[in-house]
Length: 256
Length: 251
Image 1 (cartoon, each protein chain N blue to C red):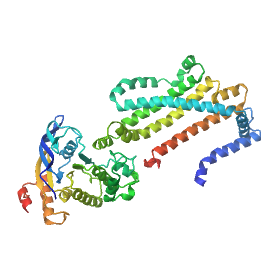
Image 2 (cartoon, helix red, strand yellow; image 1 turned 180 degrees about the horizontal axis):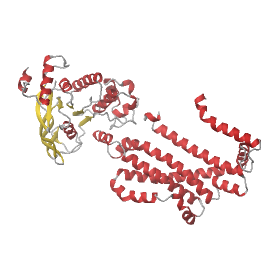
Image 3 (cartoon, helix red, strand yellow; image 1 turned 90 degrees about the vertical axis):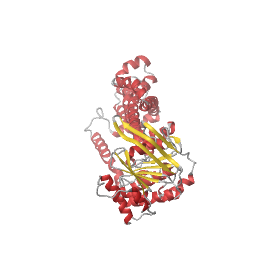
């Protein structure tokens, strides 16, 4: 992986509150170019909010966010996001959805080649309503990638898909991440999915980062690999609060 | 044409045949209800002397211009009130107040203002079409899925491109419901206006025929209104089908 030390995203002491409620507290995070980060945690821990903040869809109360060393202020064109529900425009054909925000003549060939990559070339002229949930998410992925984002945000994009489609989509996301040398942040509640895709898994609990776990297993990852299941269990135990009977040592896992 | 397409025609055709038979047998007097054939003959005569076409044409023009003016203004206010809360609080409650006045109640006033010239009919039709288009445009825009607007922000859509790519197509189904309502109101308004205050048009044709006890022409006028109402509804349906073909319920 061409992972340099070049930071794409930096969060410094970020705090987010809704009225009295503190949603995110003292978040410090640095994401380097080429990294694939997975953020896990229980529902309501603030992981989706964190992603929406990075996308510029939510304001923060204090702290700073830098995208490519530029202070984030509202929306930033370098960051693209994929939502849990595809959010395709139903009145636009598949290829028009991918080209959203581009001029009509722009990037024709790129749209076609992306459609081919996500396996939807023959569906280019269909309405989104004619596609399955998995296919719609492929379109949403292509729509995000056509802009060659510096940072790709994935907000539980596979949450609503069936198990088989999920695995196919995970493979597709992994392949595209490698091929295009993307920098990505995935929010998921599925620890196995996090360990399958990411080279860093971050756990958020009650608005704080409580674990930042590198994953150094080679891609493509084998789910039956003993180190894979060990890592999954470790993270799960941490989430479930079984710290006493699980050996939790980030340093050791890295060196495995 | 297959059997399914014929199905809706069975009842009307049967009724007309029974009506004709009863007239021919003398069970229904032609002073009460002329037979279908008599109506067709009078339609034919009126077409030959040009009166029918000129009256239908003038009624169509009134509906068209009333609809364009009233619908256009309704669309404009629906748009700005839907897009801006400030404009909504300034304008909406006044519009809602005026809406509670049945627009046909203004007929005497309109006659005093405009006489029985074209303006009076077009004014009333415009007033009648304004409200359905205003309300449906306003609600269509207010009910646009906010998650799509948020997505569009991520893809740098702003201003006009946000409007044309997201907000307008999302509110179009509701706007078109308004169009169909408005067309219905437009014809009802015109019938009343032409019957009371006109010297041309289908309503005038009917009132004129009433004075001379020409029942066939009175009935013909009623049928004409029905046909024209149906005709504009069919056009609205075609527009709906064409512009909403992305929507599975219109496919």
